[in-house]
Length: 213
Image (cartoon, rainbow, N blue to C red; front, side, top):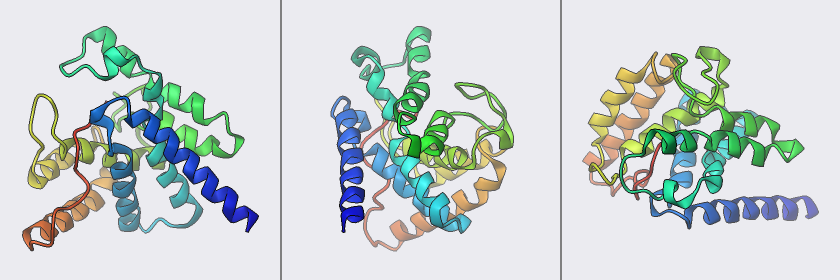
């Protein structure tokens, strides 16, 4: 009973922390929960379960928490960012890592958050890791984060269609994304498209717009 209480309290505290971040910027509202849901669906495609899956899902919920340390004038800027502003945005995985790693129990989660903007070809940030040097959880979250960004409206473009998103994921394999994750992501997107085509309601993964930086 006590363990259940503290588990619920911890989950509630995480929800409050995410809500505090999302209250600062309309383009972040709902983003963390959508990325977490997409991550969960990808984990099912990959048949990853147990402790590893739970840690990856938690990292997905917290992946953008470092944006709480980004100045409002940068975080909420509606247009394109200047090089200096972009450099500030690129610090959010590091800030997130510093926040989460204060808990000794969340070291693995903190590392996944730190590296979720690394790219398979080594051109990502903050450390320019390449290939399998990037934690698997970070690679999965990167795909989920990109899908949600593409399916969400931005100040400078409407949301992409599922087919357009699928094309971007395919083209990003081996560059931005782990090539072994392209197949599971394609299956997920095709299933979501099938749900929409069959008229079974709007798929609830691409809602309010969000920056994917």
